[in-house]
View (cartoon, rainbow, N blue to C red):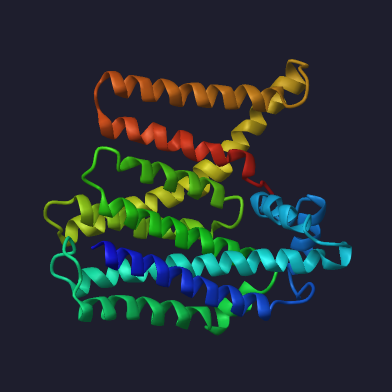
Length: 310
């Protein structure tokens, strides 16, 4: 088992190195057409881009611009960010492919794969990851300063994390992976909303792992629940929280005459207090499921400072 795991990790990083060389050697030397110029300028000056905004992208992009030797190289450093994040996308894609392929090739994944099985599993990972590395669409976005490379990285990361959870789902500490997924999803809202599309896949993995008997009705129910989660994130978390915060701000400033930001601060404190109270109450009632829901929401709320509002 240890030998296979080492090969899996090693080949993953080899594929990552190939992807990194591919993208960094073919990177755009300056700003590309369409939104790239806007994103690069906004990241460099920490400005606000077009709605709904990409604040976390701007923060990370600004970090990379500090490595430019002069302003003429700012654009290429943001492009380097996309290249590296795309290479990490390939890394997690490789590990995702090998994880899923192993379940098809091996009858018992607890055992060490045979040589033939290891070749099938690892070979599938290498072929799949490299095909995606050199695919036209992904390669195109990997070498320019756009949000899609960053969004692809976060999508690949969160799906790989749910597979890590799936490996240890019966352990008492397995929920730490769910908490991390919730945080990454919250952060991803500050990059691009495409990351929310992996929620149905995550919910299905959770259902298939936890359900004693997988049925069509149960599968459709899991899909329905995942759609509800996406809708709550889109219209409740992203738009609703910011909109309600605006109502508090208007009331505190215009009616009560308090300083700017006082309403938003009060609203955030109330929201955090309610979530903490919810976790406490469910812990007292010894309901693990009810406790996980407010706790996951509180972790997602950590991404609120990175949510842009148009």
